[in-house]
Length: 523
Image (tube, rainbow, N blue to C red):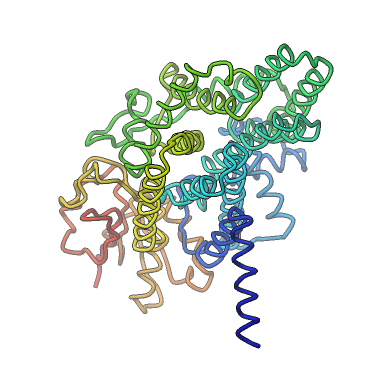
């Protein structure tokens, strides 16, 4: 009897997986996150992002005018403001609990986006296999997956872009009022996260004008256009407090500032410091090529070639309302963004994180390429190669956890001592500070520990992420000579600290590269 019950339960689980693999993958990765999210560290920009959310909250709910003088007043807060609302609503006051809440909700949005990507690909291809591959192409990228916990700037924008793509495909497939309103709301939130999302309304308007002309259904398409524009405009204004004072001028100012971002520093690129305002046009392509699995890049190139071939041979199908036309949007977002970045000579730094959202149209072109391979044996071979790559990525993530965001493919040298660090940024956000502090506590039983960091402000935020009973054991000194331990993540100092090499206590490494070192100064 027990064996029969077990078989029935197993069969039910199997049926659920086969019927809806996307939902299974969503809950599988959500379960993984529940056991792991508390181990990811704090990034350089998190406290500043939260500060922007707090100032916008105070402006919206307490009539505090500080927002109008805040240096980041033109940042969209469609993700940061809800985080502060949750924080205040639940009365979360402890710094660790605040960061844990932020990390979990950020990752939850990312997983919702991955599920929307699955649904989108199924809508385009009717294939559960290809949809599952698309889901995994997103969540198995080690850098993007890790950033989904502690990067509340770039990953929420990637997530919302995915959701917008999904609702766009749904809206044009169903031509329903509800879906166009949903699309308008999501588009507004996308713009309110990062103003670069403004490209989406122009694409949607273009599609609706084409449909208005080709379908001769003027009243319905004009209604869809009106509702889309109304919901987009209204929610953009409502969800972005900075616009309340002077909507048009403040919006234009935010766009202008975004095209020439105000970050005057230097980035470590191919073994030399390059001013952020002088990053070469190939900065993004190079970073993408060295930090993305090689097979994914090959599939992307093949998928784009397939798209170009199809648009030449089946041009009309890309004009009118069908699944093919969606790829015009993806190609416009991908190619248009890269063109604008080059044209405006946009400030770039910290790898390619500002353009992480482009990975979504890239995935969709990868899937298009796989789908268009008509020889079943070749397609199955490609799918097998993809899943083998997933296996290697899983091994990397397990070995490096929770620091798997430091990832480079084999186009760079992993074996020569510090060759990667001598050429490329590794832990540019100081996320390794938190596990470094944990490591010291696990190997030092003294009541008071003096610690210094190469970037003190980031280290202090990592300290706030410790449990309260562990925080009290630390005191901090700006001069490393006065410390018990000195921690570096090598940003703007990619070479070894020769003067204190003999004091090395522990290294976090990737291949034969140190990207975070703890020095034990006093014994």
